[in-house]
Image (tube, rainbow, N blue to C red; front, side, top):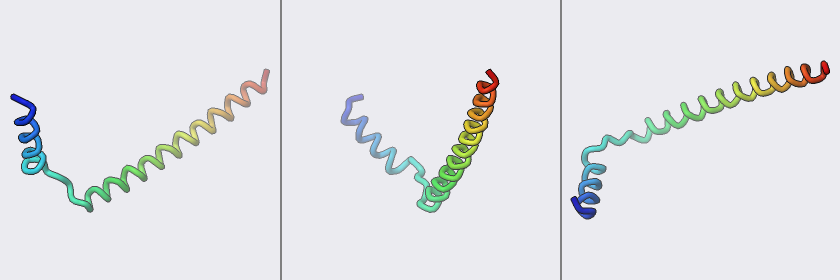
Length: 62
């Protein structure tokens, strides 16, 4: 298979065989990812703050 036929078949497959999501689904997915990322970042931030406080308390003992 040469490169020209590969490119032509790839374009044909992308146009006719791939099911693309609609815009509303993409928006919902983007919002879901954003909310999940914010929740995860807050969770990691709280864990980091707690760990920092525990380590500071531990080091102040010595």
